[in-house]
Length: 217
Ligand code: DX5
Ligand code: ZN
Image (cartoon, rainbow, N blue to C red; front, top):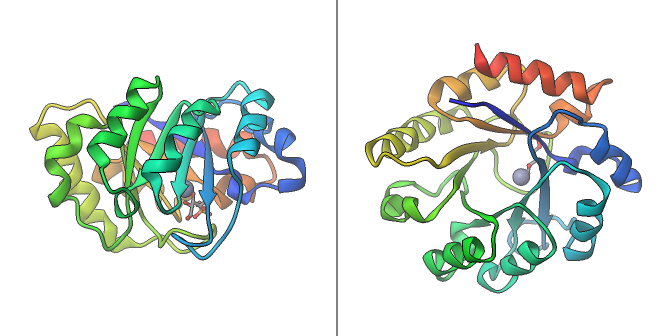
């Protein structure tokens, strides 16, 4: 399984976004957390900032939309240039239609589950997705402690992916660090979002390399 490390710019210095985006050379994707103050109790950035980030870095953007009414807004992030767009299952009225629309527009379609949302009701939807994101903290803020109780959900999801012979990536987001990444990888995750563990390090690129090595072990 190929390991991917996606630094989250939520933990970067927002007054120097372009520079911070380029400080993680060697990352697979740049994870961009979009929050609307409704779906989660925090507000970050929107389409114009995503457009600027696309121009600022060669690293493709992995946009994680923590916003209500995802059916309406997600396509705009594809148009803005995101290579992967993740909507929340809890915020999409028609997830199959939305995933198909994202794919038809040329991006990777991905769906996220909050910690309390089970995977089982979504089993039949997996073939419509390029990635599934299992939140390992309550979405809204960086720097929270990893929820170990999510490990069985990661394991079950990996089993479903194998059972159906699917190619989709399994991403984890929240509290991923040097001390938790091995547990996530062992449970079956292959795409790792890390905010504070990368941007809180003195050398973010080195932190990406170290996480990659640990996830492979
Ligand atoms: C939280 C965001 C995460 C956040 C992760 O709602 O979705 O992407 O940036 O930050 P860390 O890695 O610090 O938990
Ligand atoms: Zn995120």
